[in-house]
Structures are given as structure tokens and as C-alpha cells.
Image 1 (cartoon, rainbow, N blue to C red):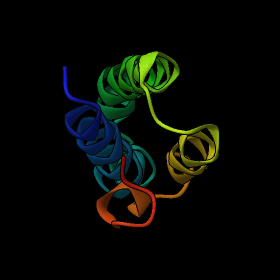
Image 2 (cartoon, rainbow, N blue to C red):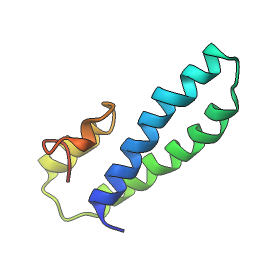
Image 3 (cartoon, one colour):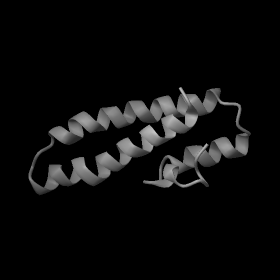
Image 4 (cartoon, rainbow, N blue to C red):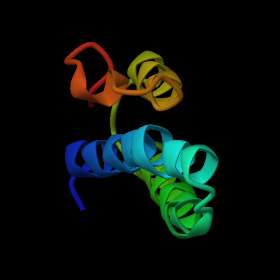
Length: 82
């Protein structure tokens, strides 16, 4: 799969987890969202990291893309996108 697509999927799952599932867990005491979206985001993150390892990007750009995965919304910026 395309690395850019993997980055967008990883970033989208992070934003859904932080922006929707976690507030629902604490605001209305509905933890099911975190139990569903959390593992989906974890898998998306691992697949994205594996894609970075397998990519032919220069090492400095790989690190920038990897660090961008920890900042919510950073993968949507051209600076952190592969």
C-alpha cells in the first residue's frame, strides 16, 4: 500500500481516537469507542511504521515521518508527510 495512504489512515485513526472516542469515554461514560478505535489505531500505527522501514526514503525523512506520527494532525501537513 502507498506510504502516503498509510500515513493518512494512521493520522485519521489518531484524530478519531483523541477527538471522538476519548471524549465519549469520559463525557458520557461510554468506553466502547476506545476499545474499538484504540486497537485499530495501534494496528494502523504498526503498519505505518513497517511501511516506513520498508520505504526507500532517506533516513532523515523517515525519522521526520515517524516523529510526525506522534503529533495529532501532523501527517496532514506536507512537512511530515512522506
